[in-house]
Length: 64
Image (cartoon, rainbow, N blue to C red; front, side):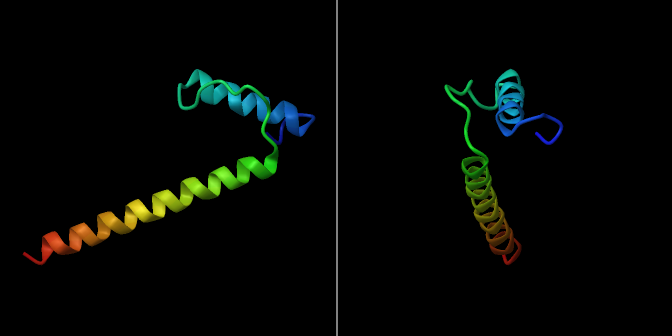
């Protein structure tokens, strides 16, 4: 995103890459940087929870 002239152009570029990789469907509009950061924080929280569950399950499995 930083290599583009504007935030909107950088966001459109990222959205295009994600759509081509089929990670996320093509966006109807350009999201603001604040919304992108909030989405990233939600994803990181989900990953932390999943990692915590994995560690807990591993510890339970090792105790048997």
